[in-house]
Length: 134
Image (cartoon, one colour):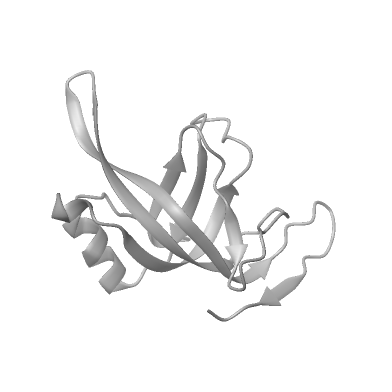
């Protein structure tokens, strides 16, 4: 199905639960925020619901039910630290159809997550920033 082709978006990363499932959803997930008008158009064309909140702009929550979300820097180095809100990324969104209890829709899966500007989350400490251009 053509409208389920992956789409690459540039986004601000928020609430990254990449290697630990989110307690509320039970899934690995990340909010991809402040999406451009073009990204919103591309995502909506694939049937993905794009939300809007004052502190996040246009955003989607990409989820993975069974597998941790792997993040890497633009040089391919795996990101092993916790990612602080405000980090920047390029993400490959992989739409998929779902059906549950008579309802259907399009989910927001995630393929590749490349962190282009990493701000490390350090509990009780000072964050470090790394700028990697793609």
